[in-house]
Amino acid sequence: MTKTAILLVHCPDRRGLVAAIADFLYRHGANILHADQHQDAELSLFLTRIEWDLEGFDLQGAGAFRPEFAELAERFEMDWQLKFSTDRPRVAVFVSKVDHCLVDLLHRHQSGELRCEIPMVVSNHPDNRRITEFYGIPFHLTEVTKENKEEAEAAQLRMMADAGIDLVVLARYMQILSPRFVQQYPSRIINIHHSFLPAFLGARPYHRAYQRGVKLIGATSHYVTEVLDEGPIIEQDVARISHRDSVDDLIQKGRDLEKVVLSRAVRWQIESRILLYSGRTVVFD
Image (tube, rainbow, N blue to C red; front, side, top):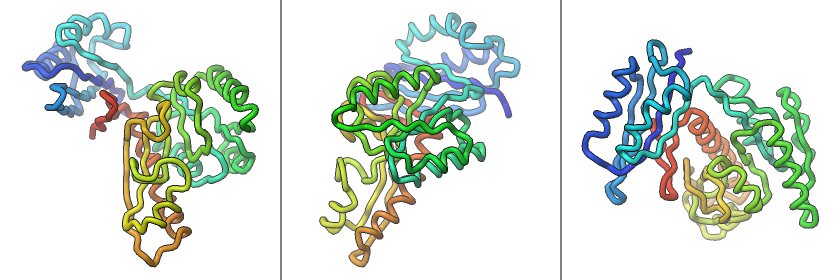
């Protein structure tokens, strides 16, 4: 596999930005493999993702790159991140009883589609222990009640800190995370909501969709914030339904959407394809 570096930038939109970044990379021996950009005309912002081959590049590692790029970044007021394809984020998957999203993620991880480490699956129910351990991943049961929620979350946070977790994925984890928990992983918690947000926030969205007689159902992956189901949206998809479909039919069709929409979001996060700004996301090809 080609070892690459990935630069994510957003900054005020000014003439000469693309030329300046390309010239910097050229002068240091970069062979650009992919480049994508977006201009937000409303906010006058420039956003880009550039990936280049590290072979022949003379600034090896973040420690060498950062001081050299600092002058250019300051001149153009850049908010920027540097990532490497060799990075393998450590992911904690949280799940309750329903297993379809968990199983899909574990299979994609085992097949090599998700280039990350999954050192733990965390659950408030024992139901998914067997399937988790089948994939050779430790399963951690943390019972959560109204009375012990603060203590349970504190134990989960300590466990994740000890494991060096970079990203949290809620694979149908049916608990509302506290603000304290969310603050520990800002923009690093991805949730799947079984509805096409902003419609049908909260619990039992398929039942409410059925009652409203909708013709499309959807699923939404988004970053978790302190406001329930209001975080920046990463990916969505829909399926057409009809008056012939029961609530159970909606749930079954929705499960197919949920696992695909969640796996896309997780893969894009791992591959550093998402740029978050002003409460919204840009997902680069």
